[in-house]
Length: 117
Image 1 (cartoon, rainbow, N blue to C red):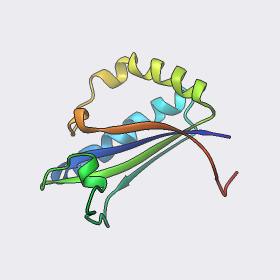
Image 2 (image 1 turned 90 degrees about the vertical axis):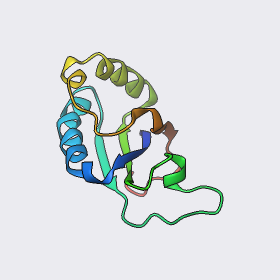
Image 3 (image 1 turned 30 degrees about the vertical axis):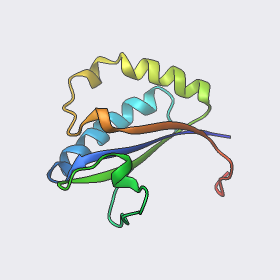
Image 4 (image 1 turned 135 degrees about the vertical axis):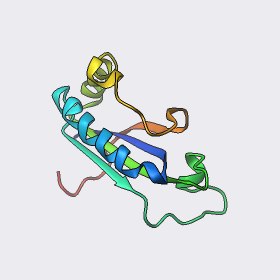
């Protein structure tokens, strides 16, 4: 089964298109290093929870929205190796990040159920 790397990212609302362009430019590089699929989603129905929710998890400010993103890798080992290569790839180092990277919620997940596999 695949390995999933998930992200919750606070992005300024007025930077939506900048984020989309960044994601579109980075996706082929992720694919080059082994990612099977990259999905980027812009929040449109983010309920406010009593204890937590997507916006609270990412500490999104009132002028920010949340991107929910995931990358499908063949395995955790492929993700780890791919990320090592991605972090040292100079093509990404010059890209403008239209969000505060310090507030990204990120994690790796083993698939429990996938109706496509």
